[in-house]
Image (cartoon, rainbow, N blue to C red; front, side, top):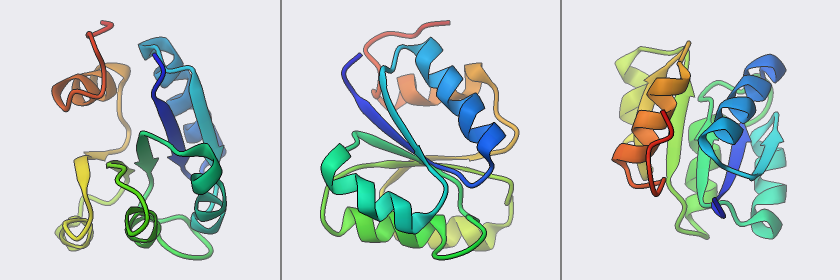
Amino acid sequence: MNKKVLIIEDDLILALSLEMMLKRIGFKEIQKVETGEEALEITESFCPDILLVDIQLGAGITGIETVKRIQSTMNVPALYITGNSDNFYKAQAEDTTFVDYLIKPITYRELNDVLVSHQMLEVSNQ
């Protein structure tokens, strides 16, 4: 699969887990960053087709603010993966273009099903 994915996640273990799931699904070009600022730096040169984004990134700008800034210069959808089930964050996310809002922990099947249902994959790899 030629689509590029940028994972924006400050939890390194979760970022690695997401990367492994994406590789199993069939993605080959995957980059991981820990902060919104790093995401802004790499986005222009990497040109991702989808962003997998944690909302709370610890230090620096939030995941939602990062997506807003990226989407102001390029048309790339986001998939939020967060530990926040609070409607406050989901309402903030509505100001961005996102395919779904998943609550951690997520499974391979959940991730695959969301990507398939939003036509981010050609076929389902279950």
